[in-house]
Amino acid sequence: MGSSEQSKPNLYLVGFMGVGKSALGRKAARELGMRLIDADHQIEKEQGKKIPEIFADEGESYFRNLERQFIESGHPEMGCIVSCGGGLVVEPGMKDLLKQKGVVICLFASAESIIERTSRNKNRPLLNVDDPAAKVRALIKEREPIYMDSGACITTEGRTVPEVVRHMIRSYEANERSFRK
Image (cartoon, rainbow, N blue to C red; front, side):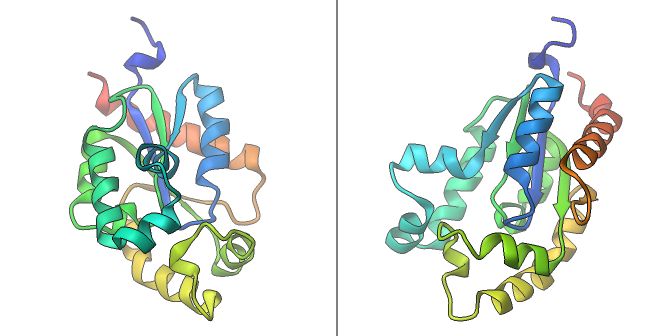
């Protein structure tokens, strides 16, 4: 099989919404010859509805359960870069599950950047509140320690996309050896 994508351990991208997990993941996937899977998009496809609808109809804990199922068994075990929803790694046990399954990289940005990037997107049910900026700051504060402990941390702040992708690939290659099956 050589170093074809099937033998490459998965790379899980975690971090707050709006840090660029999908866009950066897509570019890294192209360079590494891997496949990008967006956890949120997969869940939407399977459920036949958008995440805000899932939240509205079934509630957040139902959605978190779908995320867990997706990580446990809803995607290939190798050869993928998985862009995880912002809250996925925060749920009890999820951080450790991801670390067992592959290399975890956490992407960071400042609260200001995140507020700016998420303000245009209505597909974010947790920010559907009167003061989204305050909500972003509160969520970051709550989640940061968990993100910090989930894997290699890379900031996207003030960096070009190619710079961040290079850093991601270096970090992935430094960590993937321990996952060779």
